[in-house]
Length: 121
Image (cartoon, rainbow, N blue to C red; front, side, top):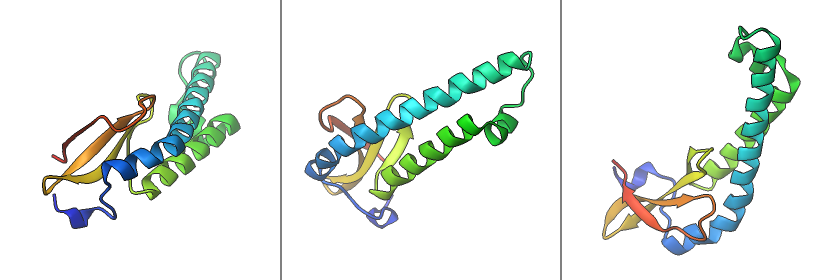
């Protein structure tokens, strides 16, 4: 994958500088996801186990609000040039370059800094 496929290539230092902001955003994402899942589970239970989850997301104000907040936070994270990989695990990849190769610098919620990288493939 070529470097021009990403808007920005991060250094480890640049990625680490974003971590305090990302921690707040990922924590918010996880809280909203939990809230939406709990509400959806309750709605399914109330409906006798046969509710359509897609319909719930459209019709339930609490689920809709949580999904809107999640979308906004994910857009902000991606707007930094990062890639949100997994909300529950809090995984974020930063396109970077190591020894002339474009890679993903990896960070997981709770880690104080970027600990590793992996090939883009």
